[in-house]
Length: 289
Image (cartoon, rainbow, N blue to C red; front, side, top):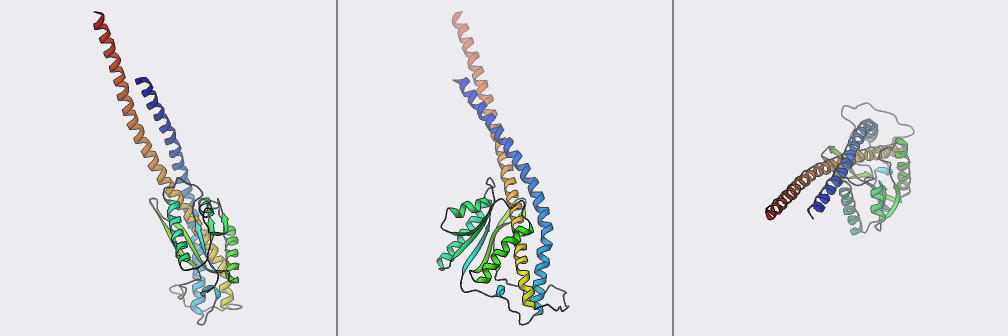
């Protein structure tokens, strides 16, 4: 009986060691992907900042500026762009995004407003496919390799629907990377475009826009939206890797602690078995004498 117990404990130790090797490898992979994602985010940020500054200048220099992308629409559905991960084992990363999305969907439903969703990330696609929500588009496995061209394709489709009046507003739910230990889910209003009343500080020159400021502004909108999507997807991917790295680090630490506890139990059981055998040998010898 004691031998069988020792074998079971040893089997558990080997199983936990195998799991620890996997979690350690996943931690290293997540760390590598996190570093690359942060570098990609830093390269993409100037693209968005430049577009935003240009749009601010156009609005600030045009006193009677009017654009459909800055006006509140009274008809059409609210589009939610929800960015989640493509894989699990990342702690509460995906759950936090889905909680924000569900809260917003409930608010729209309570107000009697229609909602449609663009799901980015396999987990987001699976989440909304199980619910009675109309999916406008699904994108899986694009977080790591997304390009400006892919973001432009998505943005062009959204802008076309917005101009037709099928969409009244565009909102974005994603996770931002704050630090290796902190990732925060955010809900962001994208369209109609707001808070562009002032030009960047120190800017005084006047520019002539042809054929008109409105035409130039409207031409920038798809690129502006693509910039937001590009930066958000990259940021979310970095946050996912940070969350997974932290989860795998905790799992590795737990496995190490479990192995230590099991080793202690194994040694105690082994010592107990040896002591029992010695006791039985001594008792047999005494009985014979």
